[in-house]
Amino acid sequence: MLAIAALAMVTAHAPAEEAIGRLKYGGGGDWYANPTSLPNLLTFARERTSVDLPSRERVVEPGSPDIFEYAYVHVTGHGRVRFTAEERRNLRAWLLGGGFLHVDDNYGLDESFREEVAQIFPGKKLVELPFAHPIYHCFYQFDRGLPKIHEHDGGPPHGYGIVHEGRVVLFYSFNTDLGDGWESEQVHHDPAEKREAALQMGTNLLVYALSR
Image 1 (cartoon, rainbow, N blue to C red):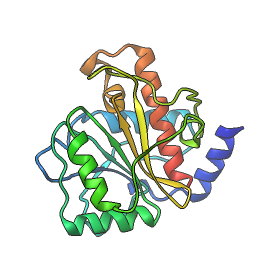
Image 2 (image 1 turned 180 degrees about the vertical axis):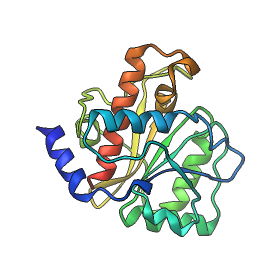
Image 3 (image 1 turned 45 degrees about the horizontal axis):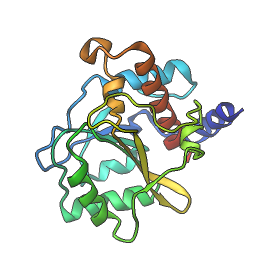
Image 4 (image 1 turned 60 degrees about the vertical axis):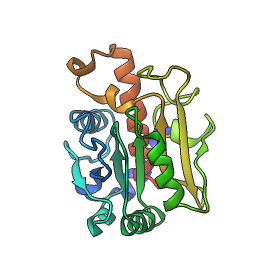
């Protein structure tokens, strides 16, 4: 029933196909990492749900007015993330106005990303979302939160969020590397069950973003 209700909301509110993007940020990090990840996720979500999604993402910059066309924007990479003051203002306005930013630590962006979040939302903190949060249940069920895809530093994965008026506007998947699990099998040779779990969780993020 949750999945049916979520799809009904998405159908009612889904924007145009150009609403799915990848953020081209400054600072030296490889924002273009995992090139097959979003196309694979979008294909998977189109096949498993009735959501009208494009087959590929578009690249958008944090200071561009075009970002207001997007409901979901993905961030990944291994290096530093840096925004200008104007980019921070633009991202904040977009997020508070209905946008959804998914940041997926590809091992290496954690410190600089947290510094940027503190400047974009000086009055808010990243909080770990409880496993009962709708983001883990809006289509597929993840009773234990994020699936673990890659080890990196070991330990469990964590899903953090910036919450505004009851809505998660920014979701940070840490110590799991969902995007690697979205990539084509020959890239990382992940087991089928891990790729399936990663793609299912990514579908939840799309459904959540498009239904709020």
